[in-house]
Image (cartoon, rainbow, N blue to C red; front, side, top):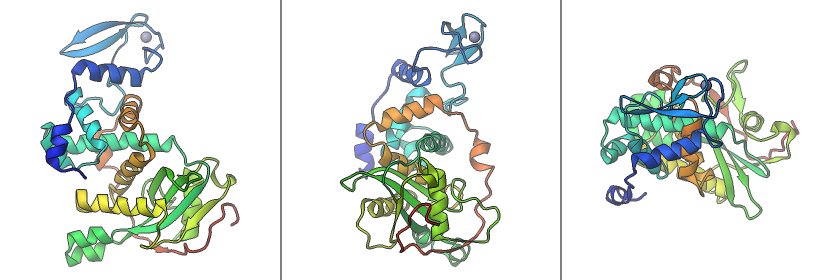
Amino acid sequence: MPSRISIRDSLPVYKEDDCEGALFAAKWPHGFRCPRCAHPCYYGVSSRNRRLFECRCCRHQTSLTAGTVLEGSRTPLTKWFQAMYLMQIGISAKLLAELIQVTYKTAWLINHKLRHAIGQWDRDRPLDGAVQLLGEYYGYEYQRQLGGPNAQGTLKPQPVMAGASIDETGQLVQLKIKAVDGPEGDDMAGRDVTDGEEAAERFVQKHVAGGLAAGSATMLPSGHHGRTALHLAWRDAVRWLSWTFGGIGPKHLQAYLNEFGFRLSSRSALLADLIECCGSYRKITYRGLVGTRSGIRPLMWRYRGHARHERGAG
Ligand SMILES: [Zn+2]
């Protein structure tokens, strides 16, 4: 990761108009559409320094940020765009607060709202083609950072399933990492114990185009010695979580894993993809971010990942 000095020097200063233009294009790629009646014409209206769009047909007023993750935020659009720019690197809320000069809480919210939009982006793009899978555990780094015996006792390593679309040369095209017990992982209902194969099958069902009916997914052996693109990506993810954040607990782990996957899956036009996410995806409230999930139920998880896993072969 670049140093904070070099990040600060390279941080672009955006103009409000440019940000509005980019968000407009992301929100209405085919031109303005009234959210109520779909009419394509509007009057530009200004209200309390906000630019509003008034439908020429039904007079409904809407804004650029209405219905998006940016809705209701008092942070200037230019700072949001700087935060999006910085998400190409993946920095902590503390550093973000310092760089774009907002409070820690605001920076934390911006990062998590961006991660929420990324989560939606990820959901819309299942893995495709030749898929490799890797079952690992996340948590050892986290515990090492926390140190205390209490943390060691209560925080179990989180089972994680990483999956990637791989091209003919073995390069990683798209990556998804899902906490097995997390919000996008396994279905908790009706089971006490999950093993690696079962988790892999569920991953394929949820995150690969065509699900179990599609071609075959190859289960890679887990462990620190793997040299495939997927092994390396997983180790990079752990390193990033550890170095940038000092490790991440189970409650928000999935959001960070989605962010990491997004960066690897969208290397060519990351910022453009992020702006598109933010223009088109539904908002989330602070309560929605912190209040709904009360952590992860501890779960026994046996891992038998050394055999090649053929999808649909049972
Ligand atoms: Zn209308």
